[in-house]
Amino acid sequence: MSSREKVRFGKVMLQGVRHGTTFASDEVVLLEDALGDILLATGTSVPANTSDGYAKGCLFIDTNVATGTTGLYCNKGTKDSCVFTAVTQG
Image (cartoon, rainbow, N blue to C red; front, side, top):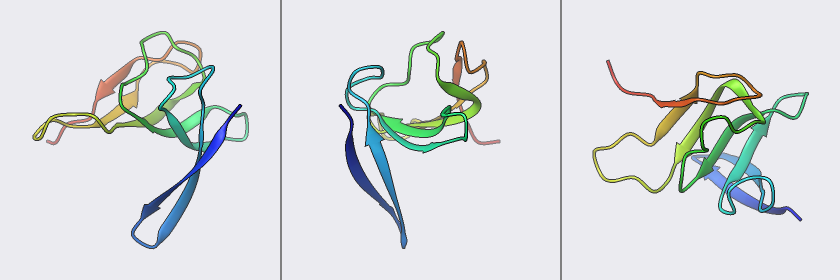
């Protein structure tokens, strides 16, 4: 069963869906495409490589990282086999 969670970015409010069965129990999906593939999600750990359901280019925000470490990851794999890599500056 999924529960809903509201996330505020300035004046924009996103309401995500918490997936506790298929995905990590603390993961919140904020945006999906028309096919149901995840485009934007947050959680305390990056999805394991080869997980499915994450669109190519999906952004994942890891909310449990040390200061000075990026928390933004991008799926460079496919929707059937993700490979999240850290997004770094410059």
